[in-house]
Length: 147
Image 1 (cartoon, helix red, strand yellow):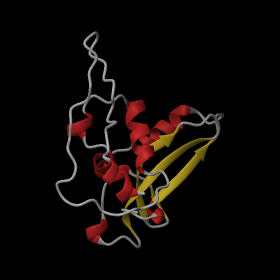
Image 2 (cartoon, rainbow, N blue to C red):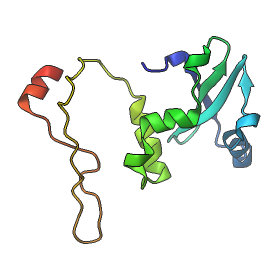
Image 3 (cartoon, rainbow, N blue to C red):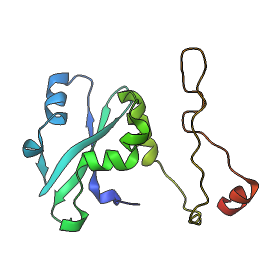
Image 4 (cartoon, one colour):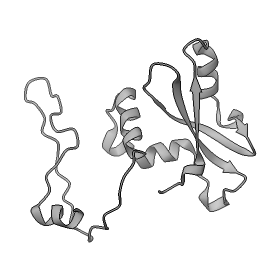
């Protein structure tokens, strides 16, 4: 909803394609990003599938994108999983968070200001493993509001 489906390009790549070619496309510097149909695309994330592997690119600028609507793929990733809250994510977990950000949703309403309370994750005393990983609690009133 934030960006519109027209901003995303899904590239399905067969398992038979040499991985170096895929990395060359994904790992481009900002000046070397691919232009397709008048739009500049940056790599956003990949879907974990066997074959074909699906790589998702984001239209950063170009035809049909106003100057104030221009965002880099890095800015989109930051919007999906802000680094200040996710500094210790593995690449795999970051990709899953980004995928979750673009999963199908149904809007239910806007929560009033100051109704959310940020609480620290529960961390295991042995080994320091995070046990809640961003999961939280919701009141009955919150459920009624969402439902």
